[in-house]
Amino acid sequence: MHSNMSYMWQDFNIKTFPAETIVYRDGIFCPELSTLQSVIIDKKYDLPVHLIYIGEIAGENVLNVDLLAENQPVFISVKTINKNPAFLNIFIKNTGKNSEIRGQFILKNESDLKFDVFAGHFSKNTGILLDTKIIGTKGSNSKISGTAQINKNCENCDSDLTFSAILDKDAKTTFSPKQKILSIPKNAKHGASIFETKDIQIQYLRESGLSGAEIENIMREAFVNNSPLF
Image (cartoon, rainbow, N blue to C red; front, side, top):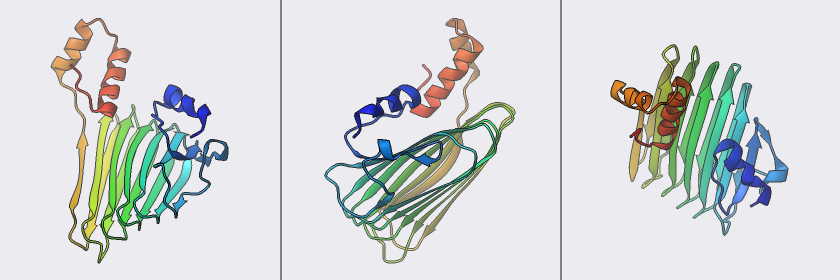
């Protein structure tokens, strides 16, 4: 792992760890920060693979992840913001027996965002577990869709496709999670939810002397980190 990746934590709150890395910033591949030069993972590495996709996006953006190696763990960290209309499509294909992909996608939308993720199991005993979080600011519109597919003759797969959102009052979002299960899975879950704060929580934070902007930041951090407000 490159030593100059410490800024990932400082600037983007992305935790790095010893891994083979594939890094995209603002939708552009960064070879100087990557130890691997392709998102086609066709061999087993001693370390896990960490794919990091960060920064500001606009227009159409596509990320294809193809895991061919057996027994290979892969972690995907996506943290983006769009201030202009954007479309982000992530296509994940796992054909590596006993290989697992875990991903957290944090998408801050300040405009119009269309996000679609496909998680396809093409071999037995594969895992794809993805957690997508949307932060919708005032006036934004988010259209979020995803499909988890376990193909024929791909038994004992572990599939989890979860969406959640925290929204300003004027923000809008639609969720469309789907499943296509053609083999008996080990686990197959999907769902969507809206994160809501209670008046008593907001009152408590106000009485603690926090401003409206500080309260908003705390609520978003609690949402992203799955932390209780108090």
